[in-house]
Image: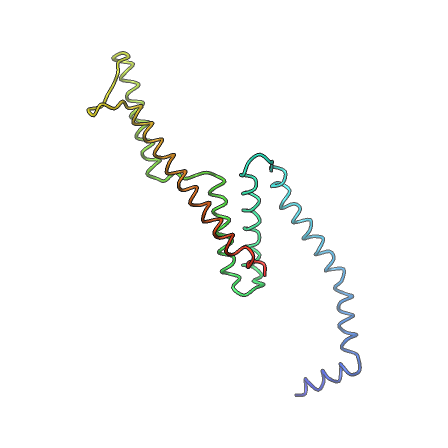
Length: 185
């Protein structure tokens, strides 16, 4: 109660407002310097991305979106300015991860890599055998040439890659459609 009476007394005689004004005058240069520092930091942060961007490919747009979402998610986690900031940061990170995955176009699974290695070893063996015996037509017991089998594996991997890429793009659009307007409110 005594603190409240003292506060009322300071408000009535005006000394509290003069203290606040004095503090604002002291902190004003610090705030301006800090504001300029953050502007320069943002310019330096975005300059490499903007320098590399071109108009002819979607990769550059995805890179910008990825960096923006990562930057904002990091700020949400650090400062938490809204209710559910951690949840929003996770959503932004998921969208950034999808942007990165679509941009890098890396959809190989460990099974794809292992199958690719076995096929390459098989093709090297077939090439060495052909060099020893001569140029003959090689077929498996089912009647398929190894080159045909390799083409089938590559086509299957390409179809799966295309399917996964379309799935990631649909999920990214769903996340943006659902959460984009609520992230910054």
